Image (cartoon, rainbow, N blue to C red; front, top):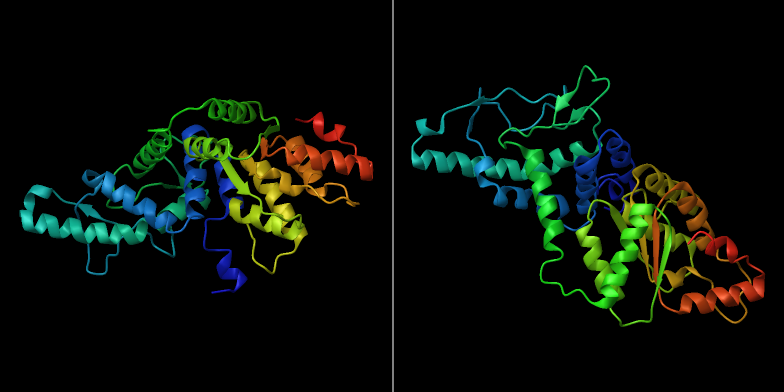
Length: 333
């Protein structure tokens, strides 16, 4: 279970999803990153499967196998959907109908996670409404045998979860400031710094905004460390790229930059003051901050830093003791 090969295959690959997402736009692109983000959470893909079956029970069709060896899913050799035959539900008795549906729901619950993974990474699977300049010969349509309009239902679940994020949440003055600045960052693709003292509601407002914009943004919360290995391992885990303990800093750093630059996702860094060196005798420049504004912001990645006033104090100390040119950072924010 600790083998890097297995550790890195558990969630859906962020890099593969970023490449697949370049073929779509709008809601379909957002859907891919929403699914990939959910795969990073405990019980993520299985949770989507349960939501799909519970929210759209009428979309579960009754199917009859063509032969006894029929299994719901895809042919592992050819990648094609196996032949199935739909029958009129009225032919079956009520008890038979319920038995068929129960059996099919059980099969779908096991098949949906694999279908979602393939949907996010397989460029040979074309979603409804997706436009291609050139369609490969082995292109398959993103359909799930036994469940009608699966992509449309997934989009509906995603949009519902985004709407529910704001339900019952009171909008405070701090919350409005945080929301407005995060919207500005996402829309203009500029870097912003949201600085305020602790306990005023920055994190709560940010969390609500993040839930409302699932599929467009990733968040990392820093701990009290200035260690590059820990920073990039946490960032890589958040993005869904290789982050096992055998990976070196340069490997994770390159993958994180590639993922963010190619995906177009926005990055929100909470407790951002933790990326700065601190102490009365600090002798190093803020290399992590320099990487953020040079490798991300300068490449068009929208980045929001959420911090406390410690950020300003520590930055001023670094500038005084090391001669760090803070204007390089300030002109980018």
